Length: 159
Image (cartoon, rainbow, N blue to C red; front, side):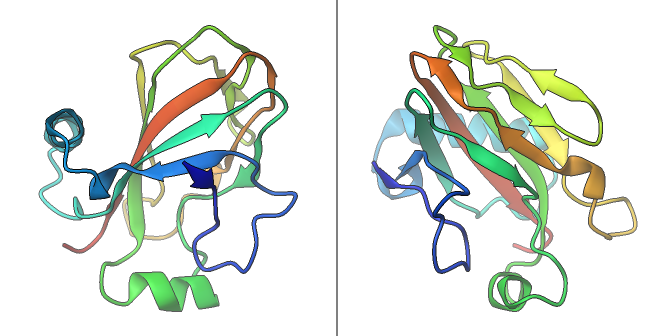
C-alpha cells in the first residue's frame, strides 16, 4: 500500500487520504479471478485493460467529491484518454463492513451506499452519447470507526 494519488494531478493533498495497492501488478490467481469476474459481469468487450486496485481507508480518511471520468479539455484528459479512451464504467467491491461511516455518496443523486462485505457497486461515468455523466459525482465519506477496504476497477472506451 502507498498513499493514494490522483491521476494526472501533482498532489492528492486534502482531496484523498486513503492508501492504494496496484493489484494488477501482483502475480496472484485470486486477483486474476476477481478481475475476470468483474469483466465478465459487465460484458462490455472493450476497455478492460485498466488496472485493478485496492484502496484502504483508516479512521478519518476520505476521498472528496470527484468524477472517475477525465474532464474533457483538461491535461488529465489529454494524458489519459489519448490511447485508452475515456473511463466509461467503474466497479467497486467492498471487502469489509465492520466500520462506521465510509459510505460512498453520489451527491447529485442523493444516494448513499453503506459498505457491505462482498457487495459490488457499478456505475456509468459516461452517458449513452459518450458525454461525461455529471450525475456520477461521488465521494468516500470519512471512516468514523474501524477501516474500509475496497477493490476498484475502471473500464475505458478503447482497448
